[in-house]
Length: 371
Figure 1 (cartoon, rainbow, N blue to C red):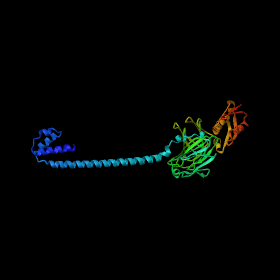
Figure 2: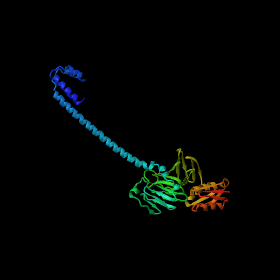
Figure 3: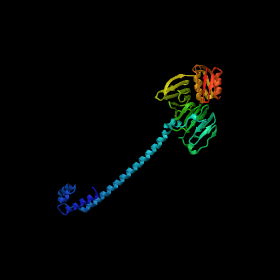
Figure 4: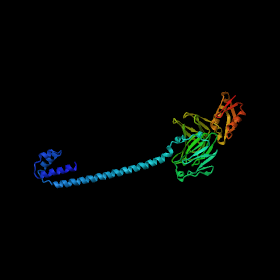
């Protein structure tokens, strides 16, 4: 009932008090029957219209105050809820930024085959480094290359969410020491993505190509290596990953233990001297190997223990970034010894030729070995 109707009812009560016949007035409003009942039940007692009007005004004021109070409470609750949502969102982002960030998406922004020098990419700079460069991060996230500190904005240095990339072109290598003390040796045509400072419950990086890792032990913060075909989880260990695009992945454990999960969520536990092969994102097999053969590249050497020449030239093609092929009759020949990867590709091929006769056909972009 609005204010106008209240005053109209008050006027009718006034007429009732003056003994007027109001049959027509009663029937013109929905409340007429109620007024008729009131009139007959009260036996024509005196009704004070001004009192009714005053009480109506008080009721309207109380209703208005109650509405304002409810509005204030609802508004306050909404503001508090908004603040809580903001705080929760910030907390969630801080908790998940390091754990759930898509490192592979970052890695796809640059290709190691498109750079000519070892390249370090930070939030503010892109630096070309010398071959065999040593990139070291302090616990606070400051970066030094060959013991020379790279000057950057202090605000950026303190940003624990910043991710850096290291790209290594064909024929070169580089070394990294992360902020937790973990050491990486990155082989030719490889790249890694890693946080400037680790934050949260896990330490996570992305690797593509070939990387040897010596993970700093930290029981409370497991170390995870992400790649396109697998996730690898460790606490502290030494192992080698080779996962060049277009080739099967080989993970060789030197010491410690690792758990590998493929794209189908199948898991494998590795013990020292185990090799795990992953093809097409699925675990193919696991076997014991001589780890020296798989990590000798760290010292710039390729050990040859009776490998087929076809397998050797495949590795050399990746390392030097040039297409090397051979005739099937030559490719099945076994090769022994070792190759110095610090030499250029011509010298390496000639070194193999001394133990295994073949002819060399060379162009600007490829090498072909024939009988």
